[in-house]
Image 1 (cartoon, rainbow, N blue to C red):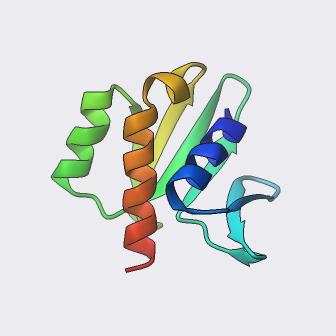
Image 2: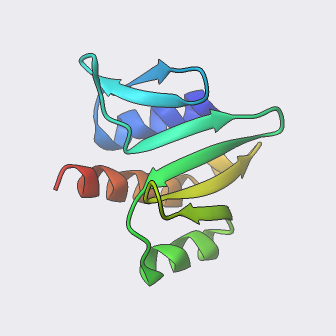
Image 3: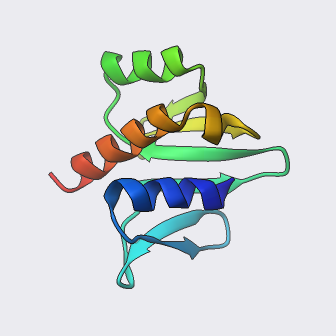
Length: 108
């Protein structure tokens, strides 16, 4: 699933490569870390973290897509979303939108 998500990031924002760390998988562009989204693989799911401010429109977008929200982390300013097998294919448009929003927010 993480490979599918990295492909979505590459389609949406550019040639980012996965950067494997002990507890999560981040992104890097030309060796420079840019973690506007991160992934925490588990056995049965992937925790997809999107760095965005918490606003009602984003909450609604996530809810309407049927993506399970684990929490909004105030300390780090990111949504923690749970993706299970098949979610990447079924909810591709919403995931692309979230990735693009996080990329734009990070680079604004």
